View 1: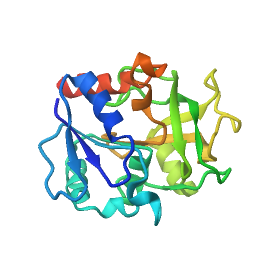
View 2: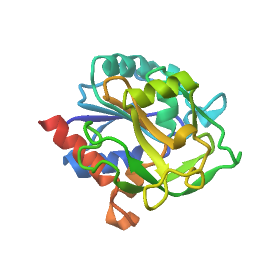
View 3: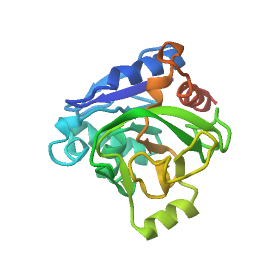
View 4: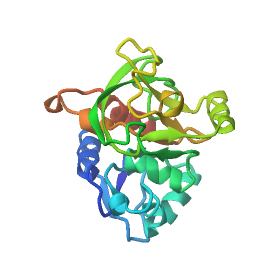
Length: 230
């Protein structure tokens, strides 16, 4: 499997994503600079976490207009799987590959901690190694992670089964107390219409090695390898 990681000025999890991908695939992904106009042939594209362009306008807004994003959008619309993590999720919404927007946390503070998520679907390339309703632990590190969409969009996401993960407690209960940033309906990640683009705020690549105190993220990357090899 050939993967590509897009590197923006301000990315801080591009190498983490690359290491997780290399561990899962056995080969290092291509590291593609945001200013490039061409993207190598890839079975998977990853938009990593960080603070692209310093988040000086809106988080992900400037990155969404980087030269390489024209090719990313083209590939995504053609069916190439795209995974956007944290800032990458913000970029996906700004590029209109996913609906809604990521807003300032309800606390108005930067939050960095582990959270629990409930897996809502297991029939996608990203979640094939998880069980429906499984509770996983991923870290978050963001100030603009509150997912917002209007009622009509939320109804459409729910009706089409496009909610990927929700913030929950250790027992899988979706509660206000388990919501770290004020995201509507505790949404932590969503899919596009075809389930080939996933944006999520928590970081699976930061818990993809026993040395990092957890491996819940490993299943996402290994599941991608298995599904793309099938």
